Image 1 (cartoon, rainbow, N blue to C red):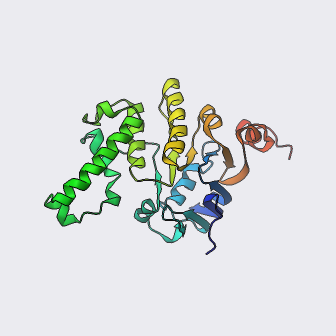
Image 2: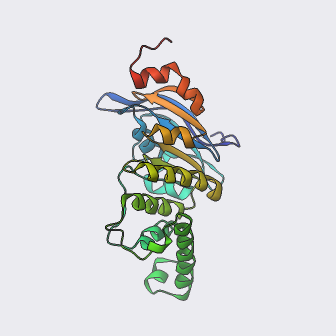
Length: 267
């Protein structure tokens, strides 16, 4: 398998997947560069979340290649790996519907993200050895630093249950950052947020790229957010590639306009 070029962190080539004879993704190809904020857009039912599920191996594609440059520096063909293995390579995601344990504190929810890197054995953790306590303290401090960065450290001991939706989104993001990601996949991060919360989240996305030196791939229906934060955007419709380019290029694309507005495509 060829190694990815220096600037490429994720390469999707000729990706296809069908459900009951219907093609949800149809020979789709695009690349995401290191340090890039990359958007995937399209009308409802375009196949965006299906693409995400293929990348993270929730779905196994029928055809195509998904190569990822792991945080260990190796090029991985993700389609040959299982769901639980993907996160270890530095690829993490959030969901449209926030997936948190409401009965635990905010801090404990964030700490769950760090367990994949725990060095202490299961027995050591069960008996709460000195080594286990020391490692737990390090991860706890790291989690608090992430919560501080996101502006919610004052709530660290509060239960997740009953928290405002905007806070829940940040908790899920904090848990993702605990995994030391190379690439974060955000599935509709602004869904359910008001205008002020969306503006704040856009700022957070930019800061994450800078502070944690990772790439970000997002699906989002809020075009203001997409056009504001993304370096490049790939537009799809009915699982097929429409166009890729800067926000300005995508806005001016007749093919994209036709897909969104239903106008006749002059091409």
